[in-house]
View 1 (cartoon, chains in turn red, cyan):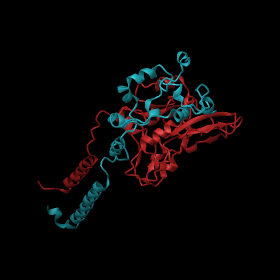
View 2: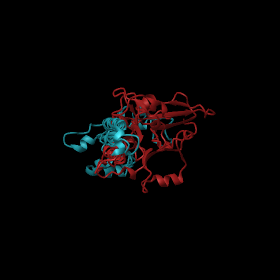
View 3: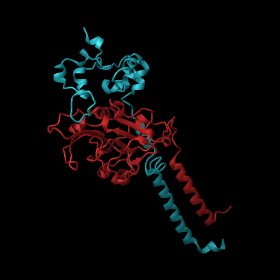
View 4: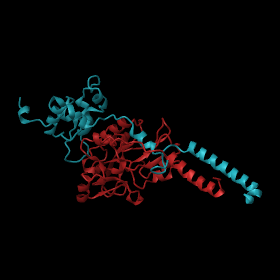
Length: 243
Length: 158
């Protein structure tokens, strides 16, 4: 059989398609964990938070977060009468060692634990120039530290200030919802450490998760809903002054 | 074949394009990492890499497998929903090798105030004390049993 130009062109296209599928490789065998069966978020109950900082310490121990940097932290809000729009917020060392008593008495005071909101439409993943950060099939916003350039675009893009540049690796870093734990069936280090159950890992695709009943009977909200990030960290009893 | 007699210059052009295309495929194969684009615009191998990090906190289920006596005491007390490692610290290594890795003895003088020091921002129904006024530096476990901290009346009477 002689090779005509037509045959050659058709075969080249077919070879390119075949080569592409070879490059993609075969999916690695995940033992018992199927990412498409999960969709993770978190529920934070402001009423239960005592500002002990166990979550912050737990996160640092579990994930080796450098001192002075935080994947999760606790803020204390002090809203004096008639100043709902300008609350005083403090978070000494991320709340890691608790909070000293307030200097100004009175007003409304409460703690707000914060972490990556694992947005379904996350602004941070959209700006990455190299595809080093992404939303995983199970809803965790993750960073591929082997691929991150350290350009800091994502750190600026996050509306919640949840990212930082790790000074040791010079790559962006953030909460992974303890991806190494949740894929083994454990809860996150912060939820494991929370003594009052103020933080709860949520799997929205698990029909038995208590979140479904909770959402039916409680009013919850996310931080900065006007950013349209489809954040998945839900706050119960959140005050309107929280930014 | 008669038509191709004068088409040598076209064939050479095709050959040049073919070489460039082959070079593109080779360069692409070298530069694009394995698994890139399988789930999205990222390396799918990164998921397994992130998931492979070792754990530090074993989780309360692991503790409860062996320490059923403590579970029993705790289940009746106010601390029933406080997980073990919240106070005892990360102990996955102890779970892996219980004999050689032992958890440190805790000092309740500093441990309990972490949660129970009075603060205006804490929920009003949460038990809070000023540690100095409450015990004056006496360790909390002198009177309270940490796993079930309420002092029973029978115990309180000497």
